[in-house]
Length: 121
Image (cartoon, rainbow, N blue to C red):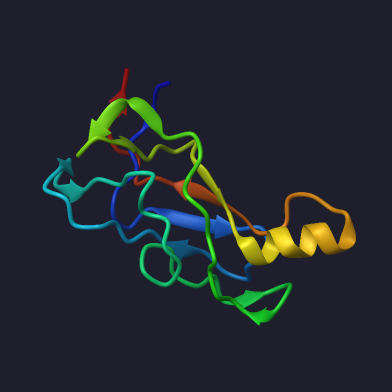
């Protein structure tokens, strides 16, 4: 799978959030165009994924995100797949609301701007 590498400061959007957020990656010694690169392990709420303003489900956003899906297994960083522009994460608060109301897709976190970094092929 190819995709744009996602780095520190990439813009994120949650389907239940009122404003965008930024990705904060764990400090690993791998840089892409001078910025720390992200991996699928960078999913911890309030640490890697900052709040998205107000939450449509619980008023105040408290990211309770699961590991990123669709990382690039061909580009490993410390043996962890890299995070790309097509990766996504599910917020457990949104998932709980989906179950309660029989819906699907609430609390999905997407990368809206990976900072337009290097394309891996």
